[in-house]
Length: 382
Image 1 (cartoon, rainbow, N blue to C red):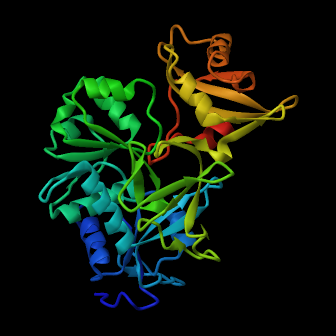
Image 2: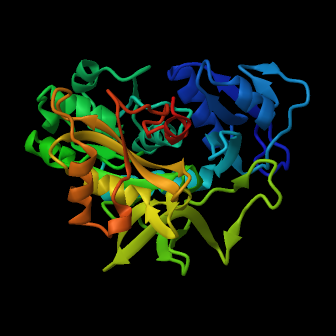
Image 3: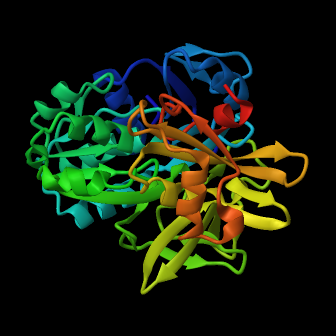
């Protein structure tokens, strides 16, 4: 057992197994200081992360060339940037507990409340469900995957979902009042989804955050207790507070802060203290000398009655540099929207240069394991 959190070289154990009691115990011991730091990995997606992040052990077996972590680090989350190269986000027990405590405070959860984990624990959203359960002093309900009927009959008080999962529950017409809280994050919900879910009795709290902030740190546009927000001159969202990570593994410097603020890759606006996320800065499309925020165009197109789901990307174009391209799942495959219809719809709501110049119709959008749209696959045309 590892019992010296002040030691500068704490062992890092990769746990490569489905969510379950063993993984929950490993995370609990890591937060309590009774065990090594944990690198949770999903089976089938561990080879690259182990090679890049070099844990000292994998499923209990020592690894050659493994490197420990600073003594205050309890969990490392492997997160891929725009290049797809795994990056290790180091999280302390203090930050994870601060995030979970602020979350419980906001949703008014109580001791003994049951939390359902049906998200991958290799991602911070799933991990934090387990930490909230620890703070509630209750056993989490852990599902190895997402099954709508199992979720509805779980008996949990609170659950975290991504929009795709909520969409599937809404399609069933289920009684969503069985949950006291549904935390919804990971991606922007399609137009109308929140209203449909609330009509079914759901108490939904939308969340914004990332691995570097121990998951959601802004609920319904308002920062959690202890979290501060501001928008820089570059339009990027900046975050400070006790929920911030301890740095990136093997990075120099490990902790990239700007005067104590973590600079996100997201563009945003603050109105009356409420945050509106516009989209990722690296998803800005340069078309004909004009800059278009892909997320803003997608949000408009998502409200079109003939669009069930949509993503917007920039594609190479010999005349415009990049063309604004809408990738659309039609509401009805028999009557899909046309490019001219979508352009006219956007021109009534956005500057003319933001209207899409190309349209792809697909049966579904490709998703990453965390429920976000796989934009790299869309840009690659696969």
